Length: 137
Picture 1 (tube, rainbow, N blue to C red):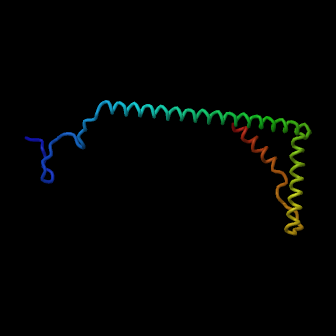
Picture 2 (picture 1 turned 180 degrees about the vertical axis):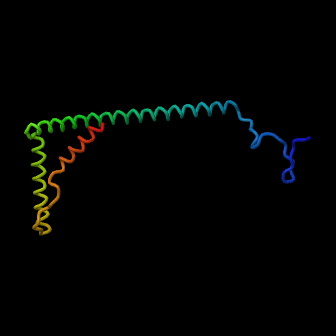
Picture 3 (picture 1 turned 90 degrees about the vertical axis):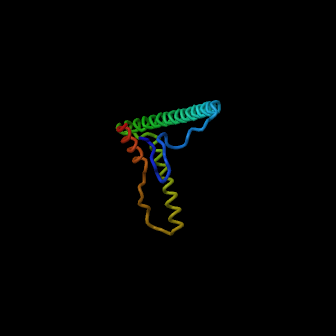
């Protein structure tokens, strides 16, 4: 028996489906392959450069955060001994002066007589968040 089939009035012969391969110039195909490989290597090189820069920037950030954490630890040890570091005094007095100036400006502009009841110091919450994250790491 013949393997050919009749579909829609046409006789189909068995074989590969789709387009027949066109005769492509072998040199052109090799050149396209080489060009594609060059582009792939260039993309890979750029990707590795980007990742190396990202790693180095993250390492610098980690070093800065560790130094800051060490500073906070020293401040806490000093406060445990009953001493208040001069940096904290400066932060607190600087913030109190800034808030007093803001409050006086707000009162004069709006004509208010009641004080602002917001948190007077945001730095202890920052210090606590650093210590919490240091125990996680």
